[in-house]
Amino acid sequence: MLYFLGGKLTGLSAALPPELPGWLFRGWIAALAISVFQLALSMRIRSFAAPVGISLCAAFLGLGMYVAKLSLFFPNSLLTTGMGVLSQEGLTPGDHLTFYVMNLLYMAAISAAAIRRLRKSDVVA
Image (cartoon, rainbow, N blue to C red; front, side, top):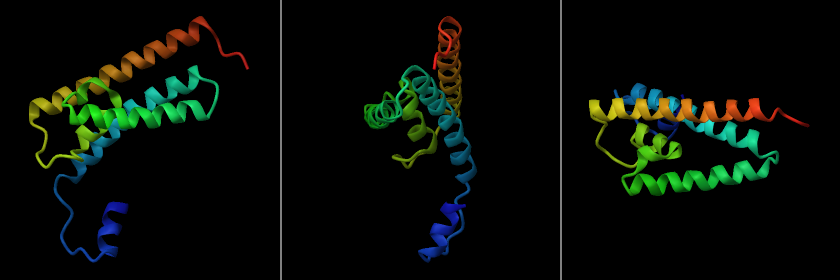
């Protein structure tokens, strides 16, 4: 919605790109993987500022890994890959499958590790 309104407020008269729903869906999937990572980090570190700072550094690391063509090996770079932020060419069907599989693997692995840690050492306030 902000994408559309921002364009209208700046005077752009072109229609929305047909790729927009795909960008939004892939961005949502990648954001879920990043959220799982952030939640696991926040459960592990009891401070507020430390997980936020680590995630900020992880975002920059993700951009660096995207530029180095290693974007599938870090959850924070999958958002850039999925939405096609820094490249004009779209994902191929094989890239789509790899993108979704890697997001699923990250979500499953990080969730399993967080659940395992919670079972071993319960939350102590």
